[in-house]
Structures are given as C-alpha cells and as structure tokens.
Amino acid sequence: MNIEEIEKAIRKMDKKHHIFKWFSLVMGIWLFLLPVLPDSFPYLDWLRVEDPNTIYTMMGVFSVAWAIDNWRTTKELRILKATLKIAKKNAWLLSSLSSTPPTSE
Figure 1 (spheres, rainbow, N blue to C red):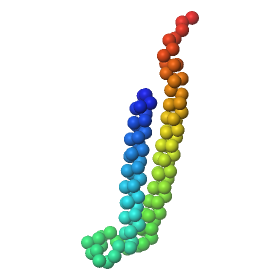
Figure 2 (cartoon, one colour; figure 1 turned 45 degrees about the vertical axis):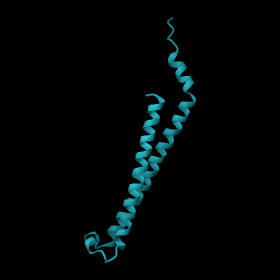
Figure 3 (cartoon, rainbow, N blue to C red; figure 1 turned 30 degrees about the vertical axis):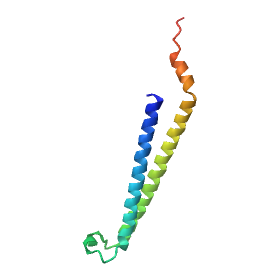
Figure 4 (cartoon, one colour; figure 1 turned 135 degrees about the horizontal axis):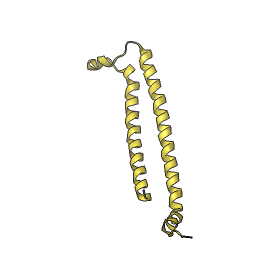
C-alpha cells in the first residue's frame, strides 16, 4: 500500500466513524425521550415501558457503550493519522531504501 491509499482508507474510516457517531447520538436522544413521550401520541403507546427501571438501564448501557466506542475509534484514528504523518516525513527514506539495488558480495 502506498501513502495515498492509506490516506484514502483513513478518510473513509473517519467518514464512517463520523456518520455512525451522529446516527447513534440521534438514536440515543430518541431513547432518552421515550419515557417522557406525551400522552398526545396514542400511536406511540407501544413504545411505553411499564417499568421505568428497564428504560433507564437501557439508557445507561447505551451511554456507556457509545462513550467507549467513540473513545476507542477516535483513539484509533488519531494513532493512524499520527503514523501517516510520520510516514510522510520519512517517505524520502523509504523511497531511497526501496530504490537501492541489492549488493552482491
């Protein structure tokens, strides 16, 4: 893989992470709003939970899972970008090593 392909892969991963982060955040807000749905929406009655502890447990699990995944993916992307930056700085060294013909002794 050359540096351009790696940059493209990192951009693609960054875009997927960004889309997933905002989608899951919207889903989480929707989950947090479930217990406070007004009674003026009778067609959403099937969403109501008899025991509020269930929904609060779901919200807690969602919050923890979202935070951990967001932290992990952000850290991965930061490491990949830093590695790419180092590779770009040392690209001249890598190209000179690959273009040097092997010496036979």
